[in-house]
Image (cartoon, rainbow, N blue to C red; front, side, top):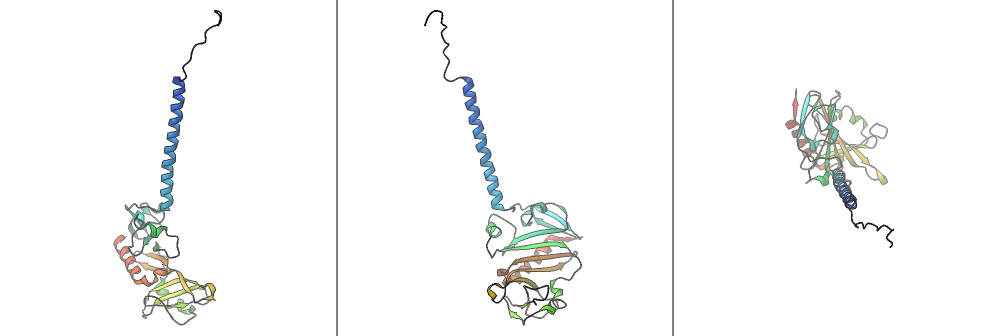
Length: 243
């Protein structure tokens, strides 16, 4: 090197600017990891809950002349989990505990099998029509297409005429003749031309406060029809206030 050539200034290998860029990159990576972790937890919980909630705080919901005080975890749809006035409320309960969604019974509500242990209950303002027990003699009897067949839990059932609006349905009723018998309508499984069997059953009842309650459950719970209705009526008596 000659005297006329300037000596290059020695630069440090690691500069403050370099350290800042590395630190910033690591920080951004940590933040991204944290976001992914939190987001993953949130979505995994959302998926496992399937729209359910374990929240047991109560909501006062008015339908017609009645107000129901029900826990959030027994309300089926999230948009209905609020106080106020509505035309319909969709509830659900596990069997046999007859409680809403909890961590302990989550398997009942998330079960995608053929025999769920869940009872779905819809409460709405009555349109003035007769309920199912009142419809048996004046309506359903006119479309019966079989002798009474032996059913579960002291019930008998009838096939309904294929030429009626009840085609593909079975009507179950108490064996004991009453003015207002227990009556429930079930979808029939007629695959392979076998004797029809129920797959899902539905019943409606009118209650005080000008309300109609429709509830349904899988056919494997049909032997418990009496206990199910007893628990449902007790629930309504405890939670419903008529204005």
